[in-house]
Image (cartoon, rainbow, N blue to C red):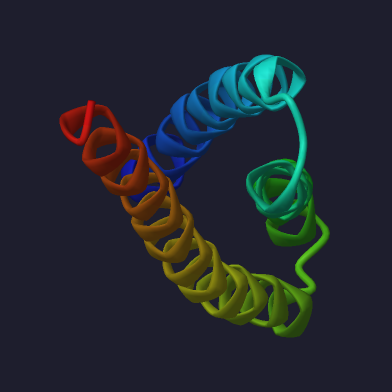
Length: 109
């Protein structure tokens, strides 16, 4: 019983944290001017929304004792989490590459 209470408390904290991430992701997305970075940010925000929905759904599947669905959600979140990390790294690389080009342009003046 104690493990269940701790699990639901952690789930609640994860849901709250992911809600903050979604809000910040949307705010970040709205501030991007456009181009490839905005397209990547849109994918990242979509993945954040997917995670948020998965975080909300998982405690309910536990309550209705559909453990096979809970396992499926966990593995989907793992897979899309890995994609999220990959896209985040690629996006950071593209941003750094962009600024490196801008900096080189400033040095030539």
